[in-house]
Image 1 (tube, rainbow, N blue to C red):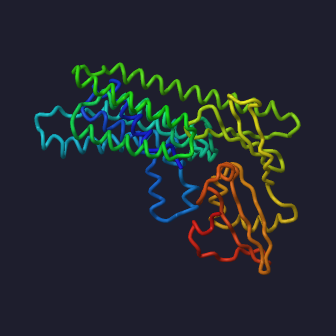
Image 2: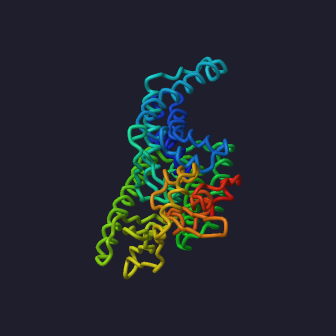
Image 3: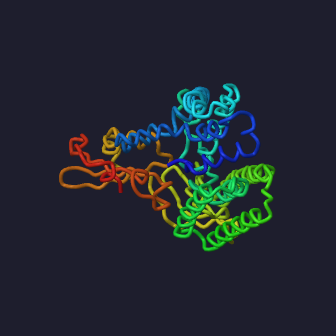
Length: 381
């Protein structure tokens, strides 16, 4: 799970449209490719790595070495395209310039870990020098308001070609289908629909008057998106402080207030204590703001330390624990041994499924893992 590629692509394209595309031909290609380049580690899923991919994602290709080296690869590919394809087909076109392409590629690559840091999945910003995970807990994995700001600005300032208009209509339709069918507040669906309607009306008016919005419109949209993100970062930090303040009776060690889709006024809460995770919700507009659900997840059952250690030695379990932020263990005894479920309270609390929700490991009476040749999905809850 990562910040969605639509957001990364819109970020690169918006920076280009805001004025950076004037620096060199193919500036947009460098920014957009750079903004998506660190996700090259996602190719690991094509190998069927399953849980092993969790231990590899958002590591090397998102760390400082990648930020330093990937721009050279991106700029080199863009320059190769320019010399071997673009200019051969159109010799009259001015050539792309190496140094501007490199700097733009660097900027594009740099936006990627910054955006990925914003959600609850986490990112190892210092890999390979440190394996520490960092979490922004500010934006949900997909944020329609960033889409609306950046995508809307690009839509209004783009060329009025039939192919471009159809492409925007297709993208807008798909995103609207996602928003309208998602389990988000009705108010968010209304605001999204009204925003799209306003963009369509503005585009129609610009076509009739033949007055296209200036690039300053995109610059304002980029600034507004940045202010929105900064506001969400600040709100997340403030919410964590308020949660701690509201629970003086608990020995709180860590707090997560996870953003919820399309609702900047609410977050899902995980409070970590030495023995359990306490789940709840935080509502900025509610009274009281913090409401614990009463659900708690014990970190581990007593008396099963050796069984848990044996399960944690399983290769897939080690990979899952490498990624896990709020791990917990549940043990079920059977005639031939034990079944150990290893989960993460981030995604159990939110009802996630698949590999993120956890892994089951079977352990025999001799404390040796029982070979499980099932797929990663079959081992998840």
